[in-house]
Length: 223
Ligand code: CTP
Ligand code: CA
Image (cartoon, rainbow, N blue to C red):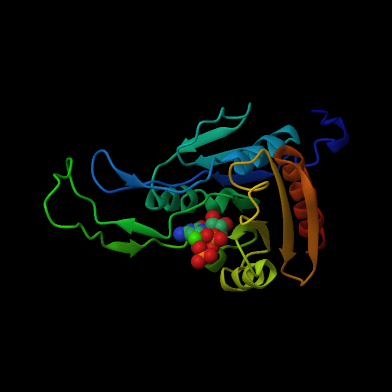
């Protein structure tokens, strides 16, 4: 991958990227998770690092190599991701929340649960919305969120932009199985705070990552 044409345009910038799924443990051997592979977040971390940024990657459990030059913080649960991100937010110029964070967590059982004759009911409680917390507490940081949608993509993405006080929401149509979660390629639409939007057509996740960074830089420079 040639990167010379990006000309170190993120030199001196501190970027935090979250990636991957979270896992919420039910007991010592069982957990709830989702389909995220972490590839989009890792591609963003790699692209930002190649362009000279000082990159911190906060990652859930994934089967991926950490890109060269990137500092990684491995976490498991949504609560651990919240802690890892919020304690580092003050230092960052740009925060990109590509992780698929669990919306609900379990009431943990210690040890391994024994099966009983009756059905089991799990009670799930809400996790804290990390992106919303960042939006409510940020200073100068540029805040980018993702939105995984299966329908009404623009409407839901714009709703999340507003509700979480983000600068941009990058919408993924996860209903199309040829892109998104398990695929090597992706296609997204970016919805900016100023009401404009930008379509990134289907290309490799690394190429999408570079284009997302270029658009963020352009938007941050005019902000
Ligand atoms: N997000 C987060 N913390 C959570 C849940 C989501 O930071 N507890 C972030 C994700 O990392 C993503 C954005 O919020 O950047 C949108 O996530 P998404 O799941 O699409 O939206 P939700 O607000 O959780 O709404 P829903 O799942 O109902 O669509
Ligand atoms: Ca969610």
